[in-house]
Image (cartoon, rainbow, N blue to C red; front, side, top):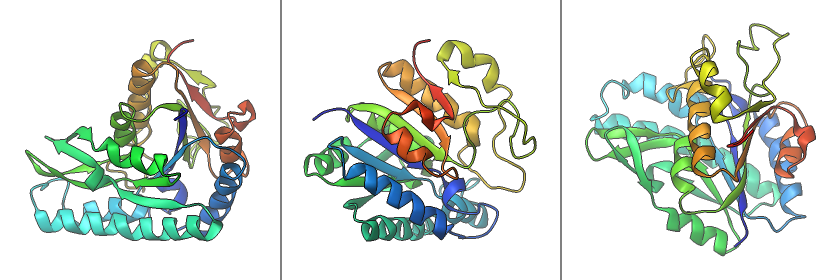
Length: 270
């Protein structure tokens, strides 16, 4: 099978992260249309994932799961909240005509002491071989040491790269790339066009976790950049692009590998 594309739709893009279980239905509808239109004219394998936004992230805070990962009822509630958003996302894709199959991150990941030890990559590989589109999502997950953990989509991707060949990764979020200062607070801020493991080290210390008022239990932009740098170090032929899904056409351009997609590119070599 030829190398595929991994697309993540961020929780901050699909939901209003400071409002409980608040879906941006119009944004989701437009994005599923863009993605389905691209998929209809290519045979490139596609894996789609989405964050949990104001669904599971809020549930983590409500249940105290972050402080008590051994609380099995809290874990169940976090996973149920993640599933509620996934149902809405899957329905939107199916309505648009893309044959997605939900793959809960909590069942895909094998976690140990708060980290993803490995993933059941054969599940995703099997769906791709059948011509289907795996739809992964950030989730709570059983943990062999702590009882429970958070399986973020970026961490799932990093582990999945050992099982599925990828050419491009697109992270569609609520900001148009990686910035040294929060673009929500400074509209004049400019994104970094390109980041590499060599150039990004000074930047990581300055990146904020998430904007004030928003809940992100997976570490925000700093964690995303760190994990994507690890990905391109491990797989230097993969190109990662972080773009704003609020900008019409940006995700479609990124899927096609078009530089006009903008945002920030993360690659293994300069």
